[in-house]
Image (tube, rainbow, N blue to C red; front, top):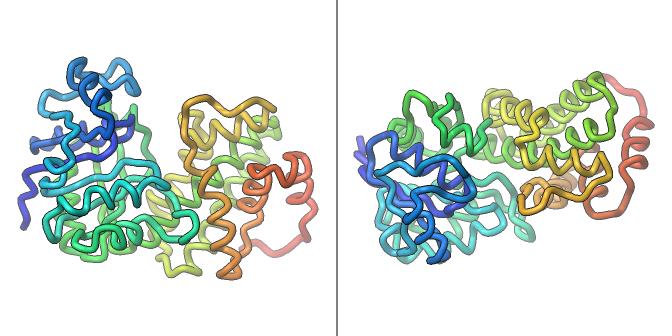
Length: 326
């Protein structure tokens, strides 16, 4: 079994910092990479990331702006936004040893190419071994050591199991699977559907509508996943249904918060990236190419692009023909 004595986390935002804390709890050598040298220096000097105020950085975490040093680590976690993943991995690739596991920790589908996160890693760093980490988790909870369970997927069962052993701890429990596509679909689709849930709450449509919307959203996620070869147990697991339930009900979710603001007729929360906003049009395009019906996701994409109003989108969903439940 591989020892994996060192871990690098690329991306010194809230989520990257939380993942560095996860790795530090395992007793491994941990490096947190920030692209901006001033940001790296500030975090290192303060031993706190301003994006996670009040949470001290573990003593064992080294903060760096040295990309080559980060690339020499045994495991690399990429915590950049989905649409920035290719650029981050492209810059990292020359510094990686052959066979280094590179784990995407973002949830999305790349614009233009329709590629999922592990496909982007494979294209940008051919010598790396791509993996994906996803599941119901918030950066602050993870950084504070609150109990969290997620899913880690690679195409190799043995590697997936080894990575789980390397990163797991009493408060951070990753489950492993080889259903890479199922994990990626769950993470990407739920972000879009969480925006819809936030809109419903912001519009004060009631708890019954919220329950119905979450259920129908899961039906969409499942149809899409099955069309692309995902396994049912993955779609109903942590990275599918579990993540959907969390993000469709909590203002801590940036996607839910975006929908909440839209439903209230307010501007989007400042300074917070909602991955679902960027994933929505790509998800709808990919679903259409597979002849998969995703009316809720399509409505979200239309609202975000300004092609329809929220009221018109709701009316369109309610006026759909009656049909048997799927």
